[in-house]
Amino acid sequence: MIASLYRRAGRLPGSRPARAGQRHEGLVGWSFALPFMVFFTVFMAGPIVAALVTSFTDLRVTDIRDPLNVNLVGVDNYLDVLRSNVFHKAATNTVIFVLVGIPLTMALGLLAAVGLNSGIVKFRTVFRVGYYTPVVTSIAAVAVVWRMLLGAEVGLINGILSGFGITGPRWLTDPSLALGSLIVMAAWRNLGFLMIIFLAGLQAIPRHLYEAAEVDGAGRWHQFWKVTLPMLRPTMLFAAVITGIGYLQFFEEPFVMTQGGPLNSTLSVAYHAYNQFSFGNYGYTAAVAYLLFVAIALLTLFWFKLFRPNT
Amino acid sequence: MNFPTMIPGQVAPPSPRRRARGRGWLLHLGLVIGLILIVTPFVWMILGSFKTTAELRQVPPTWLPEEPTLDNYREMFDRLDFARFFFNSALVATAVTIGNLVFCSMLGYALAKLRFPGKRPLFLVVLMTMMVPGLVTFMPLFVLVANLGLVNTYPGLALPFMAQAFGVFLMRQYILGIPDELIHAARIDGAGEHYIFWRIVLPLTGPALATLAILMFLGSWNNFLWPLVVATSEDMYTLPVAIALFSTGEHDQNLGLLMAGSAAALLPVLVVFVVLQRFFTQGIATTGIK
Image (cartoon, rainbow over all chains, first blue to last red; front, top):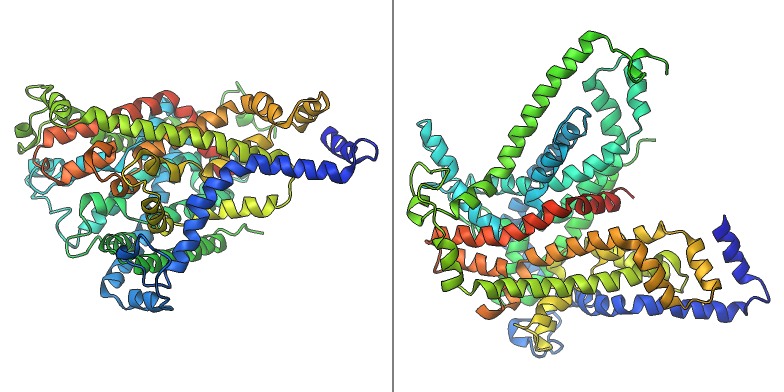
């Protein structure tokens, strides 16, 4: 109210020539924006455009000193990608990872949040900090431990299993198990982040909705489905978008744990692009990157449709 | 709303309360099991860093070190230049953090409180880049850094991350909550625009700056792929790069050394996190919900 009075006062004739004042304010605004925008243009917006252009050229590592002197090849890179068997394998793995990993991680995060949100929990901070810990740790360091946890001969898990007389499977070297192991590891790493998001969302649900449901005789379970979940829609949307962006770029876990193996069973799209980058096929790499970008945009769109507010 | 269960201090009917206590017991059990599953890898790693490699290879595995030893840590500093990796990580993370604090808060302030032409499209473009996979910019960035002659240098490691869209979003959201009256009053008192920002607005954004600083420092500290490609000689390795390369290279059989290295990389992060955990959760919650 007062703010709007001030703003109007600024435009009153006599206080300052209006147009000069606006130009002055415009300059001030840009002077604050400039430092960020310089870095942003050089290191973010520029490369985004450059990658798009590159995806239509035959740029290779040998052209690195003269990246403008390349040939346009139209959509050849994209056709090469879509015809590549390795890409098909990588795309299938990524889809499995996303289809299983996102629901699993979101369900675990929600479970933890709902548990911690009920008023009777003691030592809440201990749980919250403990569950969140994997989120803040470096994948390289975590990988060392997980390789030893999942090791076939000397791993902790198989060690415990052998105590019960069970011979544990080869978690990371069996092609039918490796991707599953990495999904569990990714869920372990990310559920704490979603838990925090869901906790904030749960705390924003007005208490009186539960009270009203209770009056209507709804049990706990019923309240969860009829009050909690519908009210969490915006939070779910945010969580799904963030997780989707991250999981479609699935790369670090296979890179440090399995190098994409065995038999490409943990090779992801991002990993495939990285491999092509290290082979020096920059045009191909850019095409894969942009296909992934499109996939991320489509998945995000899908989440917006799925979690559209109920009206 | 005058039902007995909702009046504070009123004695509730006995049966639901007993049910609630039973549920509470189960709930705690579930939460504790979850906590154990999540924390076990860290506990096992820290315990393992005090074991000999022979003991780490033992079947069945041991929990507590049978003969606790500090040899792994000693070896870490003797045979590998661990202090150097630590210094590299800290230096790059500090530069990235300072860059983001300055640039993001300036732009965040402009977006929240100033009027200037092109403001809305600028905000939208910056926001939209948050959806672009890192993979898209990765290769052009490498070509750029190579042509600037910055491969295997500190600027090459830090510059690309010094202005991140997420930080702008965080700072803008926070500064929106600062009353306009304050800024207008200062302007009427004749304060310059930069004085207003640095002396009046910025000191009020403490919690947001703290959150941003922690997230950026950690992000850089844990950043893996970029330093792996840009740091080409051992003296420029950051901690994650060193650990990843040693754990898959010549030292991959020396499990004790690897455990110690990983524990040493994680411990500072864990300590910082536990001490400042409120800022993490607040920051994530505010950006997530607003």
